[in-house]
Length: 142
Image (tube, rainbow, N blue to C red):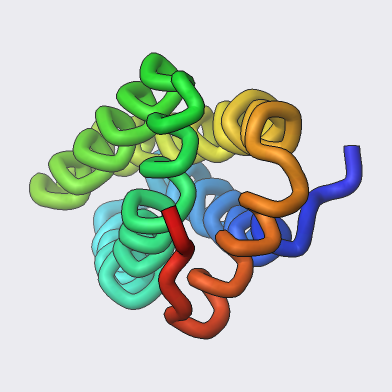
């Protein structure tokens, strides 16, 4: 299914997240210095890219999905976002590997279930309005 433009920026950001997960997964099996460098990159990208991405999903997409009745998917997404926050707090090889696995699984869920559901249940008008909110900060009329 081709992504609606409102969701396309999220999908593009997911590609960067998958690259980060791949690097973290690889570093988790390497020496301590490689792990430390990977953690530094993870924390920087988490702060500058993933957290803003999560906020945009949580403030834009998830509220309209909740109104549409997709409560389980919304709650799962929120739980996974919170879990990612906790995983970056403790620097260890195990957590680096778990971070990589969790990020990959979260992105797959969002791409294959959450976004497909959004396109199926929200309709073009809501997605068009969402695109305006995400791109321009324009408020959606409720």
